[in-house]
Image 1 (cartoon, rainbow, N blue to C red):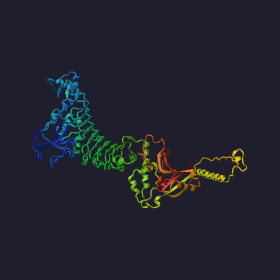
Image 2 (cartoon, rainbow, N blue to C red):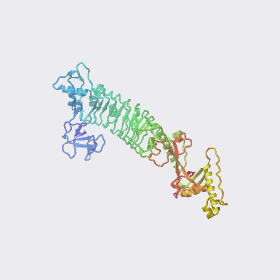
Image 3 (cartoon, rainbow, N blue to C red):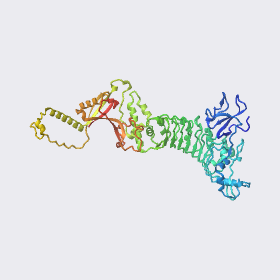
Image 4 (cartoon, rainbow, N blue to C red):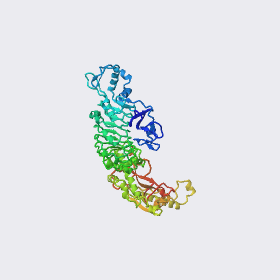
Amino acid sequence: MSVGHYSGQRLSYDGHLATVRYIGTVKHQKGDWLGVEWDEPSRGKHDGSHGGCRYFTCLSRHSTAGSFVRPSRPSDQPLSFLDALKKKYASNDNAEAIGKGENIRISGKTVEEVGFEKKRQELAVLENLKVAVLDGMCIAGLGCSPQEGDTVQEWHLPSVEAPGNNSQAMAITLLDLSRNLLEKWVDVASICHSMQALRTLKVDGNRLRDLNCTLYGKETLRSFQRVTELSLDNTLLLWDQIVELTASFESLNTLSLASNGLGVENMLSDLRTFTLTTLDLSSNVFTSLVHITCLSSLPKLTTLSLRSNPLIELQSPAKFPALRKLDVAFTDIPNLASLDPIPTVFPSLTNLLTKSTPLMNHESASLHTVARLPGIIELNYEDITPEKRLNAELFYLGFVAKQLAEAPNRWNEKAILDEHPRYKALCELHGEPAIVKKKADEDEAGTLRARVTEFTFYITDSDLTKAQQQARDIQNQTQHQRHKPNISPTEATNPTQKSEETIPPTSPQPKPQTPISTPKLLQKTKLLPRTIDIYRLKGIVSALFSIPFLSFKLIWETDEFDPAAGEDEGGWSVSEDESDEVEIVTRKEGNYDRRRWVRREVELVDGTREVGFWVEGVGARIRVELR
């Protein structure tokens, strides 16, 4: 058996941290071996199983976190907290600037020792230190290298006293002990014992095998009572261990528990840190909010990060009434419908992060998200202004209305509405869209009905009068040219001479003044196949209204609306990819400002293209407009 090593021991090999999980022999190998779990899983070769035999189990559950090393392999020398602190912050340059002072007293006793002047200078520098970042310095304990069975009395950080003064506690407010060789929570408590100003503590990347501090009384844990921020990232602690450990932090506001493998089992125990407002659970293995229902008991929790979890749904039997900020970026949230439980589960939510999720692959995902969630005011770090919300909600209404319009008759429209629970509320707010069926049923595909469109042509009475007058003028001019006598050569050379047969020009008649009024519309309906070309369509319209073929153009009034020019500056466009997808349909009784929106119109350009190239659906409204 290897001497000096024990299970749970922290070691560092060339700066790479590992934890001893096994000590003993390995099949088909000579001598003793140390089975270690590397903090960096990629450095290992297996998961503790070798040659068909399991020797140990890795906490990280990574397939290559474990390997075997010889006990004789040299490891990095561990440092005490004081040595690491002096090494980084109490350099000779800093110490030389400190003058001589009075005798130093430790724990109430005056100490006189050769060379203690240098210690005085070092401690004077450390006394004013506010931020101590000591990550990755192989710290194993407070004053010396830890040994199995050490007691807390050996680990208290000595206070510095001068004659006639009270104890001078260290002024550190932020302490970072990440990625060190700490094994016991009591070691951390002993280091923090004299730091009454401590507010932020980071213990990321340590592997604590013993969390018991109760043997040493409440005095040991008093330094944690003022800490407001605690980070335990990548410590691989179990949830019940975290609950036990954080119970000593009575003022805790922010807790980070990233990369701990949480979510494999349900977290049943409630945190007892009722002052907690921010919780980071990123990079764990949560797939559902069911695993974190215990967090609903935190009355002040306002910010929750579930970033980089394999999260696939946001349904939860519990509510988080105080939560305002939710981060689900880099998760597996599949679609926009997955957001629908948010108003129920997080009724106070105002800020949401959904970047790099499958739902963001949906066209116009941001517009859908804003429309589905009435309470959010910031999405992916972008403020939701009233104009952006109006744009998103009108777009969403049009999107749902288009689905209803294009749904075959055999589809259950209730199922579509169930997929969009906010649709009815938006109809009450902005007006219900007019649903016009646009496509024939699949059962009718290939039939004549599936290939025809009911065209409604309309023209104003004034335009019709003008067009018909043009037709009469053209007819009169044609008849006049047909009956006009031949002009003699003399008259041709002398245009001032008038032939007796020449009809004198008529003076223009003044047009009667008509009062301004709403124009009357004349419309005609005709069922036509979409395979005819535009020329033939215009010929049909010309015959319907008795107007010249070349005197008018045809304008298709779609069921889509666009923002009026200049109205959407600085906001989102109706379609994020600038496509021609249907966005807004006509409202029956809308109470929104119609000046901000204009109907999208398409001119049916004269040519041989089929009508179906421009127009789709079973119905189309065409405006006949004079050129």
